[in-house]
Image 1 (cartoon, one colour):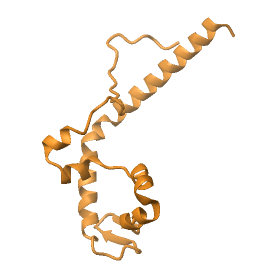
Image 2: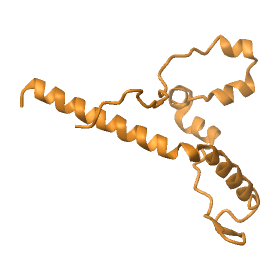
Image 3: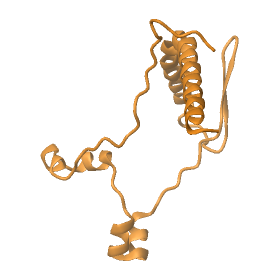
Image 4: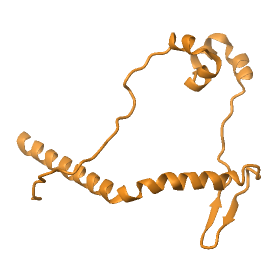
Length: 138
């Protein structure tokens, strides 16, 4: 396969992926508003069992559906004082990381702004728009 043929094959593959993505986004668009409502309702249902045994699941029943909640997921907790004692100061500081939420809880905004910086390293948004004059499929 020549370089030109490989480039054309890659171009066609990319076009088909973009078109499939666009078709799926378009197909799911009517349901986008419902997703936030689904999340709100799930939060309410979970709140009903906030004090339930973490090891056990639970069931909430309506007239047409039942919502089955599983046991709570395991979360790893670190004993900070014990980790510091085992690692020592130097290794502990190398291993430790801070979250923005934790810093915001303990620092004034002026102090916080003096120690943080921002860079565009996060994910990108991806929007899809139908072409006004689409090319016919080959």
